[in-house]
Image 1 (tube, rainbow, N blue to C red):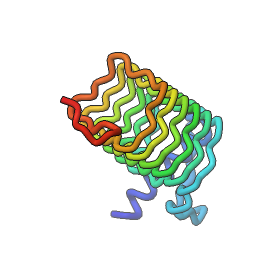
Image 2 (image 1 turned 60 degrees about the vertical axis):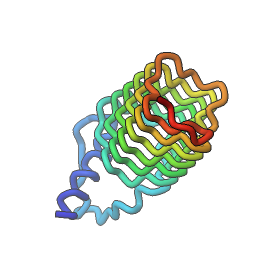
Image 3 (image 1 turned 120 degrees about the vertical axis):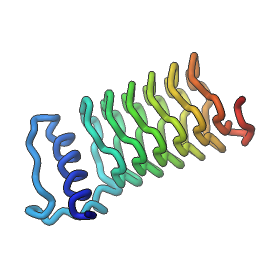
Length: 164
């Protein structure tokens, strides 16, 4: 079961890295360890409609990446660098974004339902019309963030209070 799940994850990652050209490499053939995705560098990468759900991307660098309509539910991006990343319409439901750098990121229409954003840098981020229902924002830096029409229902705010 783990091998099949790992294989699907590697295939999704390979599709992302080659820009969606449909080229993939089975992890068994190249001896790829999925733990190697942690601290991955994908600066200025572009992808549309890629699926990185549950990927272990802790500490990864996605600085300036263009990831529109990307599925990243329950992804582990703890401590990742997403400075200036384009994540409009991305699905990040239940994602671990603790201490992630999202400074200046574009999260327009992004779904961050129940995401863990504790201690994240969201300064200058565009969160307009984003879904932050039940997200945990404790200790997050939201200075200069655009929250126009964002859904903060049941979100835990940076000061620890719960939004109605």
